[in-house]
Amino acid sequence: MSFAYPQKEKLKSKKLIDKLFTEGKSVSVYPLRMMYLSTVFEDDVLTKTGVSASKRHFKKAPDRNRIKRLLRESYRLNKAEYFNNLTAPHAFMILYIGKEKPTFSQVENKMKLLFEKFSNKISE
Image (cartoon, rainbow, N blue to C red; front, top):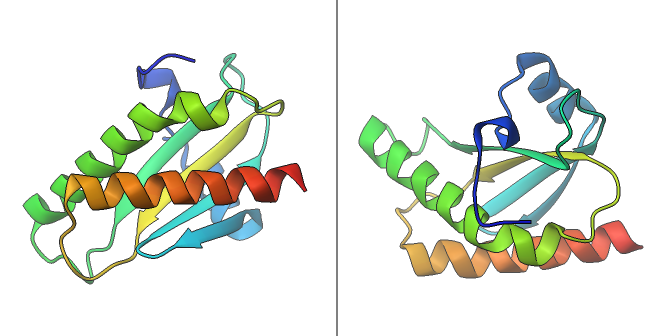
C-alpha cells in the first residue's frame, strides 16, 4: 500500500455512509472516533475512508476544513503501516469529536493509537 490517497479510496457514497453509521462498529481515542464496516466495493480497493469535523464545535468553515485536512494527511501517512494486513475490504469514517483546534502532531499521535486499537479489535 502506498502513501497516496487516490480518488477511488475516498468514501463518498451516501448509501454506504448511512449504512456505516447504522450498522458499523466504532473505536475511539479522544479526540478521534473511527466508524468501520466490513463491506464489498465494486472497484478493487481494500479501504474507503471519509473524514468529518463537527459543525457544532467549529462554526467557521476554515476551522473545519483545516481539521479535515489534518485528518486526511495523518491517515494518508499512516495507512500503509496499519492496513497492509487487512483481508476484507472496509469502509471507514474518521470523526474529530474534540472541541479545540488540534495541531498536526496531536492528530498524528492519536491517529496511530486509533489504528492500533482498530488492528487489535479486528484481530480478536
